[in-house]
Length: 509
Image 1 (cartoon, rainbow, N blue to C red):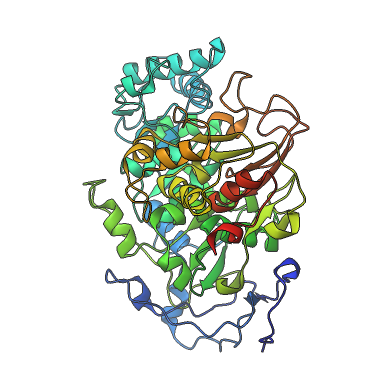
Image 2 (cartoon, rainbow, N blue to C red):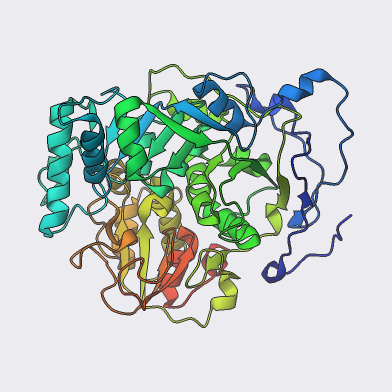
């Protein structure tokens, strides 16, 4: 039994059960019914503790068919009754997404292999979302969007979120913004389905209880022509996260903790399944943050069981019927990790890797040049509300340039229209203005992946930046000597107020 003595967050050590492909008991199936009953887990007395008891060998034949959520989804998609890790199967794809960076290449391969006059397998299942390099004068970037438009018109693609006037994004009613957030907002994320996208952060959609992963343009070209793809079934790592979420933590802190524990290669070609009372308490946007960064741990996909929160979110998003699936009680997991989140402190990932974890308070002497709040990871409505909460609590102005990039057009509208709780009716935009932040920019990926030199907030000089994005590799946001500290919106906002990497508890408690 682990000691009840608090463990310094800076020295967390994994002490998990390595299970190979032995069979484990999962929480009671009652966790997953539509009423979303609370699951009951053993009391956790350390931030990470091992599975405490061994499971006896199965004595019934029914256990032979036990599968994880990911295995069940892929079994259904491949029309097989049973699947296990390592099997290669042809799966039927429910949604294929591509954007302006990878779309042109995918379309070119499709035409090369299937013919200039070939038609995509299903024009209603292809989703095309320009988002990466949009608001720029770069002619090649602009041409990429033109290529998307030409292909979608030719193929009669139903879900093409076009942008023609980059001088005023509001004049483009079809334009959405960052693909991963737009997919959810437009109802393309549904439990039990297979969603593939030409972007590594497609795994974000696993928050909806579906199999979602990134693929390359060659695979995308094949899917365009056939609606199928050969996939290897990944083994599953299970992360049981329990405890009441402290009011100074966000899902970004949770995933930085997990990546810090298992490393950027700890989940290579594995599914990461998240369960527990903490996960059940998260909103859909926070669940999306959690699944978004499984790729930073090398994961093939991340998945969270669909529950009443999921179904409520989808009520006005889609009319397409869907059928959620859940891990069986005795499904096979490669390893299981248990966390008591009440013991966690605000975190950052120091340059130049997402697993270079540290406590925010340990980096209080790191002077910064700017703060960036945006991206698929940290540019959602709730992310901006969180940042506004810190600015509101402080009553101070920022000491470094603070850039704000809403993920989608809907988020941009929310920033200007939804009152922040406890603010007396002030919107995020009003609070940001009073704090001296930059005016919220046009929605899109912006500086998260660098982009052309005229990209909004791109680091064209070596700078130190606290960012709510997902990667801090050299050159990720522009200059190769730039230093990026990944953080939650709380920590990013707190850092903007001091000019140093700052623990948000300085303003929230």
